[in-house]
Length: 236
Figure 1 (cartoon, rainbow, N blue to C red):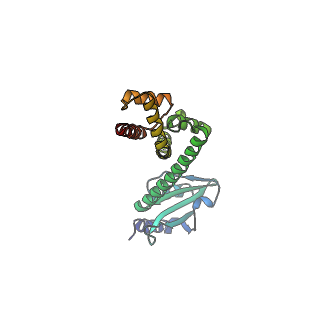
Figure 2: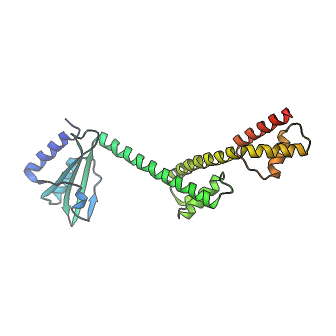
């Protein structure tokens, strides 16, 4: 027997003597535009409230999930009072898990899409400083009309997740571009060192070269450039 089958029998038994149980298809909130979702813990309490308020009809609907499509996943109960549909819902544990997983999946898609949008924004607005992710993120959220200082902690966590995804994408792009330009930078650095009659590059001299050429490189690219130039200088 499914998790909600016993509760369904209880509802039918309770309504047999005092209330009319009217089964409908679909969401009870679609019956009327005016509805209230009651935060009750027990279906018995909900039915008692309906009876106390003089309701004669209890609207009933059931839904089936994807994990166990032969078992009831959700039961909705409702009654109309003063023009409002009062709704109470019961869920199985596995259906709640399905909902949570679906929400996480959708949130992941939204984060990925926003991150891609942030990357495109970075390329168009900050092509000269793609590695400055904090500046990019602040400008992007302002562009979207979101003030990150005025939102709650949960929303900030979502923004941080988007920024993290975007940063990885931007770093991968920058690293790829720098790798493509590495042979040219090696030749340029060797020429610079030769002009100064240097037989090897010290970290200090390497920093001078980067500053003079206004190269703001990722650390991985700096290490590769430094090693490649020193290797070539030693050959000469």
